[in-house]
Length: 304
Image 1 (cartoon, rainbow, N blue to C red):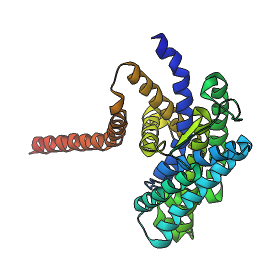
Image 2 (cartoon, rainbow, N blue to C red):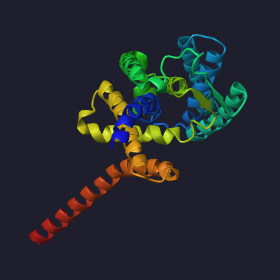
Image 3 (cartoon, one colour):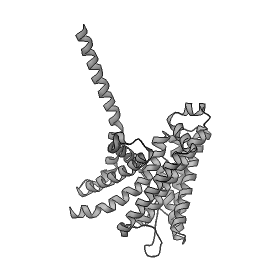
Image 4 (cartoon, rainbow, N blue to C red):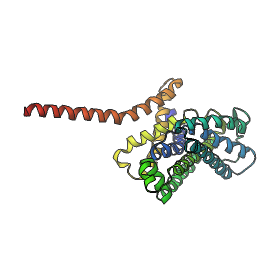
């Protein structure tokens, strides 16, 4: 039990980092209504760019900025493939993800790259979880505040309208194609930011670090929505709920590990969690409809 309690701060830090990534998934999945698989590659791209700049002696802040720009570019490529060439968004994301695999390998020069702990300047490290937590909380608060401000602007409202009702948006003069490109670019920029934070925290980058990232992001989104319920009306609350969902996910993840669960099955656990939370509203609606039909049939029988 003591070991579990000692591991919880690390799980909280991991949850905050992946909460940033989950916000990127939220932008495409909930705002744009697009399933974007680019994130599995762009999170590693952000980490790779950040790692190589840090190894080159650059400032960690500059490394973060360049990582975000790399993610924005990756998301824009997916958007252009979808809007410009008419490729379905899920396939466009897979194509970009495949390209990013090669890009990441070229950036790193090998499958993984370590950051020397004593000589590399970083903003946060798992060697000092107590110092990393305030930094991560600050990043999350600033990110949520900036996104709330952005979605309150004319451009942000147009982006949200595009995801909600693209036909009506076009009728109102909104360039929905451009909005999709902007949304995908913004989403992957946020995802790459989480990758840059993750590589600094754990002290290395691996080309496989993004595998299954979209599943973790979806799990965080649906868990956050389940926890908030009807209280998640405002954008700030929804974004905060996504981060909370990621934190809950990683705490549960840690508890399962300490309970002796087979770690080879953790990805399956993630997939089951997502499937249950995504399928629950449909099952609930079906049960309600079945209950109403039964009441209607009984009422009709009584009238006869």
